[in-house]
Image (tube, rainbow, N blue to C red; front, side):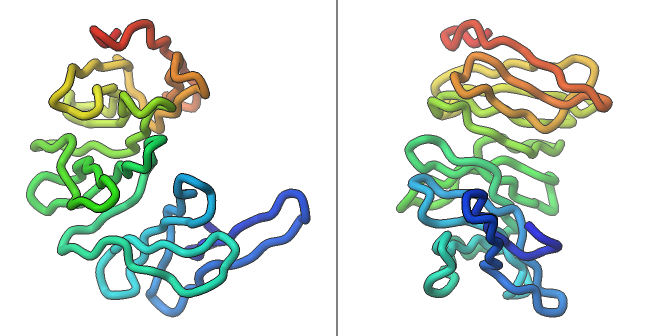
Length: 192
């Protein structure tokens, strides 16, 4: 994102191509490479509310509306098989985490009287890490995906946000007070 436009930087050629253009109060942000690296998903408020759009990564063609709902959606990560995790703003519960499986309707993953955001699928798609303020402070949690198939574990105990997985999924990194912390994932069944 450059300002509030989606821009692709080609590191080999040293070029920069804008995929969107900011006009007035119309903003585009939170870009994600879609599985297959041919399209980019992003959130835009061009219709007056935040919705999800896709665009070819080479800039060809037009933006395509992926999801139109009455909610406000912010894309966060993809599983290897293309399931999207996203933060959804709910006036009653705050930020919730929902998932969107290709060809299906969005489904809630974590909801409650608190907020959760920053969801990241593990490299194998079996876990989702996220930040939540349900304990009274922002902490990192990991939950088995899909939710009905298993447990949940708190990872941080003194604050944490912005979770990120190692490439092999055996370690979870997160930020805490200007520091980078890591936790090992030693078992998925049960989750440890």
